[in-house]
Length: 444
Image (cartoon, rainbow, N blue to C red):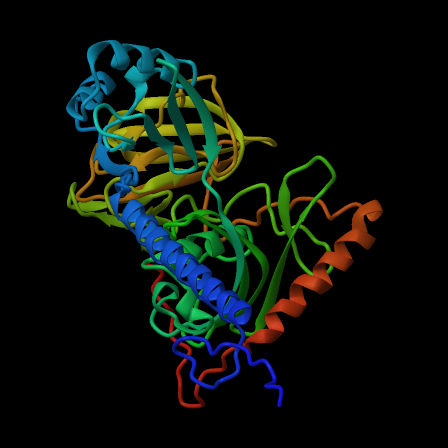
């Protein structure tokens, strides 16, 4: 009987039946996996170690520019101001020469504000000088030299609508409308402006009564600090007892702004009603008791009780025929006007520069300031009005008016008039209470 040949059993496999070549392939695969895993482990560790060894460099950000403000003191020069803020003598000299191209450094006044900016320490690299409320000189250091540029201070434009009921005085009217927009003491300036507009029609020292009212539309240019560069009326309505007055500004092409009523009649007259907007303390009289001489004598003018130093304005354009000290009048200015009119302004504390004999002055120009020179018991202005050499009462004399707006401008004026008056609709014209008495209001 023949025996069938048998395959030898693999050591360690028992009777599994797995062939040697397959076992070898499995072992090779396991080895490769171990090698790859080891490479990854050791390689990753090396990368981590290398990363941990890279130094971290922190670059500090440059210091922000530092700006400081300083003010030119009384008697201080620009060079001294620069030196006090870290400028070397050579740089100070170079910068002063650049400033000279825009403004004489010696003309810079005390109170000038300067801003010094330092970029990285050391000397300032930028300086801004406020030459005046509306212009800045920006000076920048570039490559050991300085350049300068003048900038205008930016302004914003707005409109204010106000109304006022006059009780004791125009200065202390009971206001309504956009009152919150007003700065401190701003309304006082509008009172003077209002008096100027109607100066040919109303004597604000005599004609204003308790119960009178007004409303105005004002356009303003405001600087960033809140101060005003300019202001002007867009429309005015004034109720004075039983009459209503309106004022609309209009400028002929190439001309200046003037005020007209709603019918295009000029509000401007040849003469202003008064040279200062203050109350009359002594009227025109042929017989008045003189407080200094202690006897009766003619008082051929009007006295205005204005504070010392109040500006005095020429009531009409004309030529100065007297400027200096004259008898009991003290310091006096006399002006000759058209059609044989002349005016006198006496007891002045000072006479304005340029107001000399032979000089021509404009209506509304300041010719001097109120004082008590000459034979005067206190600060006031004595004002006289003469026609053909004869004294006339300035409060009652019939003054000539300017001409009406020309026909060729009427259509344009009416358009502007209607737009301006519509602004006043935002606030009603105040009405006094029924029991309010129409007593004279005091102008000052």
